[in-house]
Structure formats: C-alpha cells, structure tokens
Picture 1 (cartoon, rainbow, N blue to C red):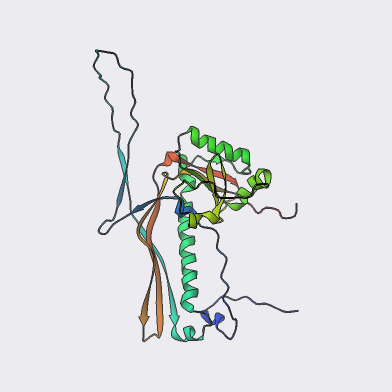
Picture 2: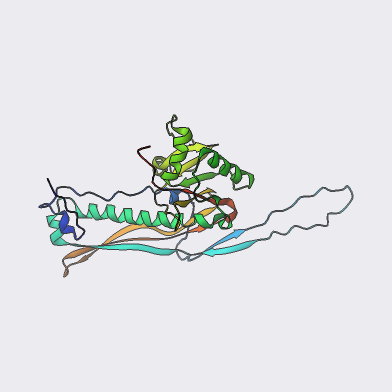
Length: 291
C-alpha cells in the first residue's frame, strides 16, 4: 500500500527533486463580475456620482385649457469610491533556480485565481440586498423550472428591465436541469446581448424565456440554512467601478536575493438601482449521486 502525504508550505515542496509538475487548487467559476455594468474612474478622479431620477406622469388635456400640473425631476444621487485589493509573493533566487517549471508562471496563475475569486465574492455580496432585501424563493425550496419561470415573470411584471440575467449556485441549477432540461444540451442562445462571450460562455447553463442563466460555485450557504442567495437582475441594477484593473509588477531585492511579485486591483462593485433586481433564495446543498 502506498501512502500519500499532503503538506502546505513553501515553494520547496514543488522543486524538481520532489515532483515534476505543479497541481493547482481547482477554482469555482467566476462570471458575476463580468455581468455587472462597468464604470471607470479616470486620472485625477476619486469618486463616481450616480444620479437617479423619478418618473413623469402624463395627463389628458382639454382644448383651450392651460396645463397647470408641473413635473418634478426628482433627482437623487449617491457616491461610489474604489478600494484596493492585492497580494504579494516573495520568490527567492534559489527556489527559482531549483523549480522545474517557471515559478513566475506558477505564482502568476495562483495570484490571478486568488484575485478573481476575491472579486467574484465581492460581487456576490450584493445579491442579498437587492429588492430591499426581499428575496424570491425561500429556505428549503428547490429552484425548479416552475419557480425559475415565476421569478422571471416577477422581474418582468415589476419592471426590472429588458436585459435580465440570472446567477445561482450549480447545485441550485441542478434541480432545473434534472427536472426539465436533461434532454436539451446547453448552448449559447443569447448572442445579441452585450456579454464578453469568451469570458462567460463556459459559465452559461441555459436560458428560460430568453433570460440567460449562469452558475458560480462561490455562493455560500446562509448561516444555519442549506440555501444560498443567487439573483435575478437587469444589468443596469449592479455596477462595477474600476480605477485600476488587475495588474502585476515585479521588484528586485538584490540583498535579499529575491524578487517580489505584487498583484493589485482598485475597484468597487455597487448597487446602481435596487429596484431592478432581487435575491433568489434556494437550496444549494450537495446533490445526491446515488439516487
């Protein structure tokens, strides 16, 4: 019998003398940040001011009678600023020389995965507060096709918008696929939408009533429950303000005989319009593979 021992530690665990190739920790899908409406801060700018106006009301007119009712624009604004997120890795010359693969390639992928995971979870935290925190669905309820169609109908009836998307955990979407869609192979059916197709197509599951459905495994269970918050929202409901995109720089430290790799992004996801989306609270527990 062979015995395998897994350890965590420094890069010496990946040197040529021990293993020939590096294995990476599997990452969940990260589509959410790419579904948000993008905003950018330019040089010298520190805050984005987002305006929102009320609706006007038209009225019937009588010939020869002056209009007396004035409309109020009802403008409100809120400000959004970005925050920095980053990580640092120190690579010693000795470890770099002894590594079978390029250490810079290894830690670059690890750093990119870590930053992407952090940004995805940042965006997901917005779901629960949509619609004033009033969720569609409930704990102990599965996201069936009927429930999914009802959520889409709710969004359409309550004027969420015409650019709707749905994001939920793959365990929640399994119930839809198991119950109704097993005979249909998933395919991209919304080419007219302004998506970054090469980034999102592998996270796309199916569409219902022309609303594309995406999955991400980064959704957590609500404390004390077996359910979690996904969301249905118009792409104008949530925004992503970016001042500095994901970037990596290196800095040489000769006396330390090492190189620092610093990865940084300066961004902030935020609610643009709370009334154009809603949380979807459904079961996301592990599905049985032996029914």
